[in-house]
Amino acid sequence: MSHSAAQRYLENALKLGILALVGFGWYLVTIHIGLGWLVNLQAKWVIGGIYLLVTNVGITACVFLYVYLCTGRKTNNVNNLQIPDLSSLTDPYPCETHQGGIASCSRNDCGSAWKPPRSHHCSVCGVCRLDFDHHCPWLGNCVTIQRQKAFLSLLIFFTVTYSIAIAPVADTLISHIDTALWESYFDLAAQKSWWNWPWSWVLVSGPLGRYIVGAVLGFRIIASELMTLRDVLRGTTSYESKKRSGRIQGAPSGKYIAIPQILASGTDEAYVVVPVPNGERLYDLGWKDNLRSLWSTPVFSKGTLLLYTWPKLNPVIVRSALRQSRDI
Ligand SMILES: [Zn+2]
Ligand SMILES: [Zn+2]
Image (cartoon, rainbow, N blue to C red; front, side, top):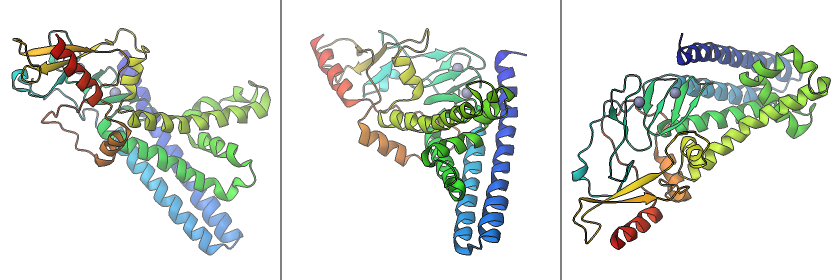
């Protein structure tokens, strides 16, 4: 069994585990806290009713988003895209080489297909995805820009739902630590790697340390929400920001912009190619426009790509590239 096949097998088991855990969470929230405690024991009919409604809607939304994000191993793959006729382009476009060349991929089934800007070959899924953000092991699938809205919604729904779900029992616990604590308690990653691990009682100075580590794991969910939001505001994907900071070995760090002749005055070449300085965010349109473009994408996108739309480029980088092309 290859490494990626083994990982896929593990991820499928993990998905079932996560769904089982969510089912268990629903059971605790509905039967125990909602019906058993609020409605039956305390006779709080209105509060109990609202609590049951909100938590059940929240859990249903989480399951729906989770299943959606798990499915579609081949969504947004770029294998069917036609290699574009570069001479017909009239706008500056990002390219891979100093000659204005574009990338192709020959891994797995890609068969030297065109690899458009912002796509990346995921070795676990074996597919070239457009607008690749990261491969999420908890989903067993890639998160792409088209699915970022659903991904972010899942994280936010999860935090809000479980914060509300534990609210009736929260006053027995210390207020802000316990959000993180319970969140990680319901988070399978934390569950598997910490809560159900007998050594968690012994390591990190006994039972107290056990809860401290649990809280830290809960905060990690919140941290990943903040990281995703930060990337959205910066108009970058987590893969691109890792690449920029040099955290991915062997990944090409340099990029180029090809400027068609009609825009670069005073040249005989069809294109003038200008390098993009290292560390620049080529697709950053400013935080307002970045947020607007996230806002305008549908939560559930169609998975098949028939036509490629060239990404909008950072206007500051384009202006400076245009200036440079005129100086050459
Ligand atoms: Zn590929
Ligand atoms: Zn993947």
